[in-house]
Length: 249
Image (cartoon, rainbow, N blue to C red; front, side, top):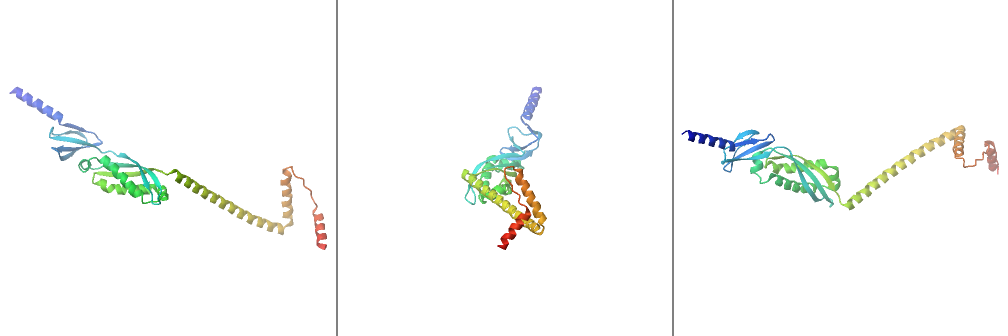
């Protein structure tokens, strides 16, 4: 009798030992009994029925998914290659196991499809200027199907848009032309402003002979600073006499 009790105790200890399951803090345990979902166990020490029950552990942390670069034709018929990353998190562990065979692979393929569908509606300039906005639109497109798998999409980030070499050269030429246009406009504006100043200066000199003489002296000083010119000064009175003689003729 005593031996039977000892055997039963040992058997119970062994069964309990095989029935112990430890779930980490970042995990959630999904318990199946004879293949049927029965409950969800929390982090810590848990007991299950050996042989009849088994546990699938699901990582509940935020995950990153690199989307394989996709070759996309934009609305204005420009072939580009898009590289994106998706951040997602499981919010319903049983659904992520029961509703889909492999939620990671399914999410990757769905992200590739939605990325091509959404980005193909925009032209190249819109893609380059509104990457954040388009990323949010891809997020909304992904969220519907993944909700049924117990997955929530946190963010979709478009990392890189790779352009063909001929398009890069064309865009470089366009940027150069825009800069050249801006440079010419600035130069023309400066010349226009300078011409106004010259007109104002001419009016001042016409009204004040002394101002004209001062300007003349300043010009001689600038010429003499170079020390490579010969300056012959003619008295103003002599020039006046020559002018009168010409007028009398």
